[in-house]
Image (cartoon, rainbow, N blue to C red; front, side):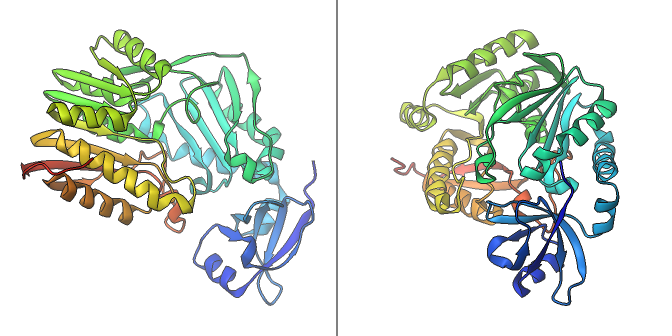
Length: 401
């Protein structure tokens, strides 16, 4: 391991972004870079003054990720700097005590630790090192997590496709403790089983905690959970008071966990396996109606060039979901596509309502959980968009094929 430091000078455009607080410097916005394979780089202004320090990626379009505006604090004691950032991040989550035993401990740039994700599932910790700098310094990070959280296991789920953009291999490493194949977590009054090795992301969608709570509060009559995964929304609807809950997903394994989760929590959920587009088309054609629908599909726009096609997909799904609602029914609809900006998603929902021939109220955007903070100067961190819509009337059905 080496803490040798390179030098970088952004262009005037890059410096303007830096001055506004954006934590990234793109390779195209660098006027000068003397880094070679060094993963720590001091940032200079045009007068040669050091104005910050960043992690450096030799291959990514995001060349620099700002660690600190005080370069000396990082260079003087890197291990101590990591510990201070990790403990500060944990301190910001104290309000979750009593709500859940599982939450995101570190959310990358939003916690001042670019490229690091740390999730706590009861007494299991799962992390992701998404940059070469973080990957190199896991021997600083893991011992602090062990002291702070006393976990049975620390697992590095370094199998994210994002690592390819950083020139990193995809792998899963047991960093501390014993191998834990599954762990039960508690959220409000429900128990969920998490698979740290094979589950989506790091095992569970922790960011949707507030939306799951809202669904529990809204649940009545018939509720449909589309792209249900392991049933987070479905189980909340069933526990919240829905008379019938139908959960739809294309994954047989995910639906098996919905069934197991329902049994674990003393709930009833009916499962339907199929492609969500096909299932919605069939339900609309059959004239089915629901009092509430949850629509939480996977990210459709993983790249900027995918946004237009993603918008068409979101529009089609939402228009069909709205047609299933009874008057007064609600739709909790989501997009986790970071490349789709919030204002564009809201416009897509308006198009979907018009196409469905429904009068729809936007009852508000449901913000992510407190453990998934949004950095004001990093719009990309505002990735999760969840709207609570209400159908308060109807018009003649329109063709949405």
